[in-house]
Amino acid sequence: MSQDLSIVQLVLHASFVVQAVMLLLVLVSIASWAAIFSKLFGLKRVRELNEKFERDFWSGANLNTLYAQAAQKAHTGGPMERIFVAGLREYQKLRERRITDAGTLLDGARRAMRASFQREMDVVETNLSFLASVGSVSPYVGLFGTVWGIMHAFTGLASLQQVTLASVAPGIAEALVATAIGLFAAIPAVVAYNRFARDIDRVSIVLETFIEEFSNILQRNIGTHPATPASVH
Image (cartoon, rainbow, N blue to C red):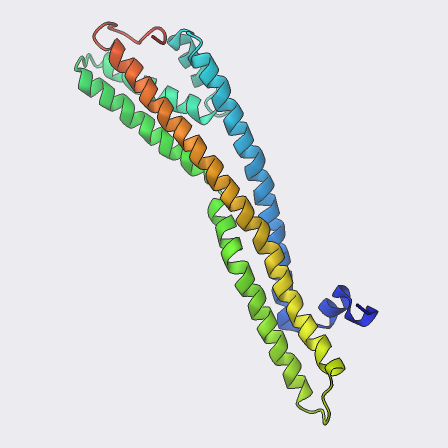
């Protein structure tokens, strides 16, 4: 490509609308990459915290001790830890009200854990819809810039007596840069969205499995332990 048709020159000589579209797509791409790295490190931390708490939970540790430790670091712990705290807290509150019905105790704990689960998944899924929007909309925004640029290029050729490829090429090339930038913004967002959606599904399965397992532990202890279950059985 000659110097006159370099990417920088094409951008500088594009029409105002096409330049605005390019700038918008560049900003969206930067925001998309920021969301990708944020989600990448965030999901890694979630997995590590869940795995750590799961090891502590199944190590036979005292549940009262685990509850006290988890309640103190509610803002720094993992999703599984907060779900455990929500379930056991509701179980204890119902016990304090001298409710002994097994179904009421178990349903209350499960509802509390389910509510906590929904809150945790809302946090885990943050920015996922943004990546989906970038992946689906960016190519069309770039295409709009391309169509506008081509229209502008042909409008400028209307006053020429003789049209050659050399006179048409710069205008069309300027317009096609917008589509290229749109694809550059969209492709990483789509790939990241698919990867994160799969990882979030795995986190969801792990948390739902924990809720069922902890519910089974509470159910086995209802009637045999009048207070909070001491440990995992």
